[in-house]
Image: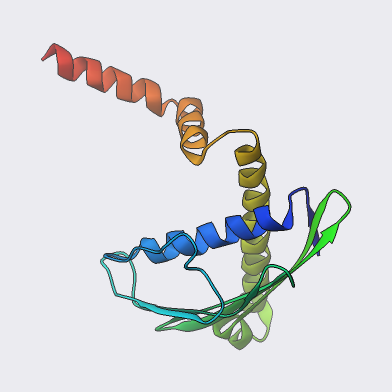
Amino acid sequence: VRKLKITRDEFFDQLEGDVRELIEGAEGIEMPKHGIRAGLKIKLPETKKANWMKLSIPEYDRDLGVFELRVRTPGDLTVSHYQVADADGGVEVVYNMESETFDKAKKGFTKGFSEAYYLGRMSTFLQNAERNAIDLRSGITPAMRKEEAENRSGLTLLKKVFRKKKEEQ
């Protein structure tokens, strides 16, 4: 259980955005704003970056606070389930992920590594969802956040130097 300082709608907006981004990352597929819904089934074609992927959403109800995503790839089936409840100052999220690969790792190092990977993915998604929702509330867009990260890493300065050298040539 994880408590986030965002609303239920903000959480589901972030979740829908991530799923839409996954779908639109496949070549030639555009996802309408309100296309993420219960019963959605889509096969994403194989690309240079990834194998084919079948994605389905068997359960999604914002009012009840439930969302389930199934992702089938050639080597795995991953099921992510979210249960969201309003809590004082935000929401509580119960997240569960089942994976054929994870389930096959029964003991030892592989099992421990799989569990750590799963917990890391879950934590990262929830942290990003909360941060992105709070940013949007404050008027900070993802593009602004990206530019800020580039500035911190010095990439913007490097780009300016290269542009200036090109202009001089």
